[in-house]
Amino acid sequence: MKSAYVYIFSAFLCLGSILAVSAEDAAADHAVQPKQADTITMTDPFVHMKNPDKYYITKGSTYTNVTELLASLPEEATGLNQDHVSFRIDKQLIGEYFYHVKAYDSESHVMKGNYFVAKDDSCVWRLQDNTAAVLIYGNAEKLIQKAEVVIYPERIPLGSYGIVRVHVPGMLPYDIKVSSLNSSVAKLSDKMNIIPIAAGKTDIVVDLKIGTAMRTFTTAVSIVDTADKPEKNRPSPQTTIGIGIGWGSGWYHHGGGIGIGWGGW
Image 1 (cartoon, helix red, strand yellow):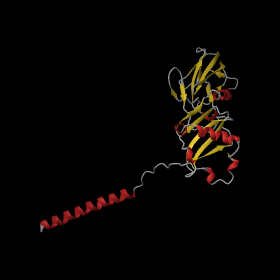
Image 2 (cartoon, rainbow, N blue to C red):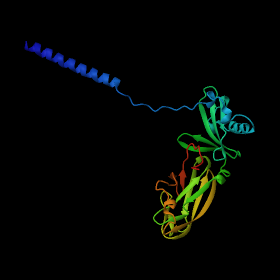
Image 3 (cartoon, rainbow, N blue to C red):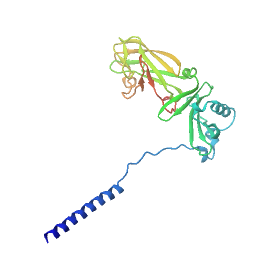
Image 4 (cartoon, rainbow, N blue to C red):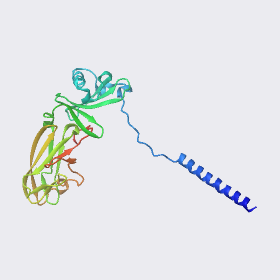
């Protein structure tokens, strides 16, 4: 009789284990699984657009020149198979200098390429998600003449700091080196902010490089004991030049991904 009780008790234990395991499996089956990131697929806006001519250049000499230039470039540079491609050119220029062009597969309507084409045909940039734009045609000699360097403020009060801003059409990648010609009056921080040391004047020299093109900007700044209007002259602590990766000799690289804008203007 005792062995029978032992047998029945063991059977209940086994059944309990089976039920526990089944419950765990069921919970695992119904557990909320981590949501995978959705892949955003850019499709041709012409598919659902009633009046594309309102927003895009669809014909004429500009359309012909821009599309023929892109079509003439090697597939390795553009990443395009020219057999099934339709180009869409925004009417609004980027920085009053670049045509923004997107290429779509004419059958699947999925975007295959994204580009900036200079209105003077001097350069073409391929824009890439999460990586720096790449120069795939021409040079930046004319583009760099469109760039601007701003030092703010020109009168920097002791205890504050100055900032350097670089404006490049389309926020394309560039390299920069900033220096003070009188380090006893002002010097540069690791973040390229202008740090006042003593009252006086100095020139801030900014060397800018885009592709292989280089240009130097020189701006005079004054370090003052007190600001004429502190509330207006003192820059925000959150505002810096936005420096990227240093590559030696005081140069820094600003990456720039897909830049749809005019560098903060």
